[in-house]
Length: 77
Image (cartoon, rainbow, N blue to C red):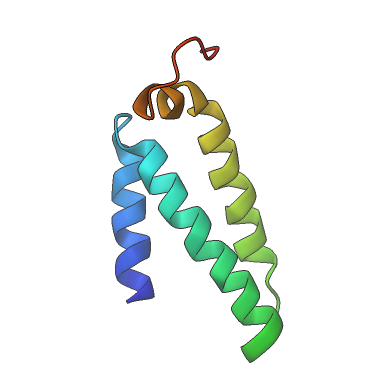
């Protein structure tokens, strides 16, 4: 299931129109991956943490598109 979510999120990142949805999906997935590493399976959560940062950057850069989607006009582009 996780692999399918990651593939779908990656495909959504490829289209500018759906990049914010893909980044949000992958951000949540990677936060869960970090928690899984820390609480259940051990190991190094650094790769998932890097992906969280990258997906958060994509969401930050797309914040105007997100604001427009939820109906908040006047947000800087």
